Image 1 (tube, one colour):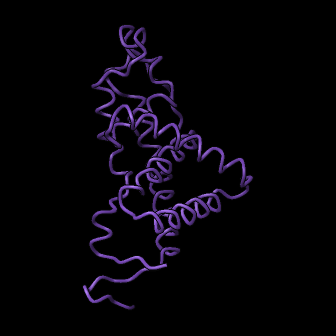
Image 2: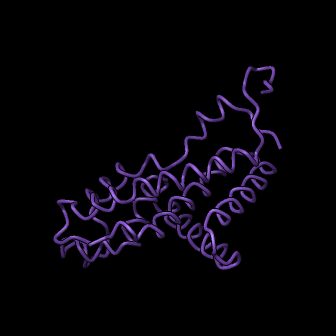
Length: 182
């Protein structure tokens, strides 16, 4: 394997995109049943949101879109554009049997949603936790006070954030070890 002058292993962007998407998909698939069980048992909720282990699609789009949004903080413009294209194409391909344009539209909608949450929160793990809270209708299960003001209980958001923060790819560590090449 080729090494750069700084001793970093060189990886092609296409390979990184494939590993990135594959890892996120595998992590989501393996852990969502446990996460759904956790969300159903949050003690601060008045009732369970009754999230089923097979209701993973929203979660997968939230995780993917959060990570797609996060790319902008780690890559310069040209490489960012290439990585976005590679990652989106790889993600769409991983969702076998899906119509390309419809899936791309869903990705754009979810990323716009994460972007709007991020403008308010300025904290990517909190934005992802808020997206999960909203998409799975957890507001309807919390105390009346928080339901009426349509605001997540901060304790619930913090617990979701703690449970999901590791779904955000650590590009800082990755880029310290590897140099990406087109």
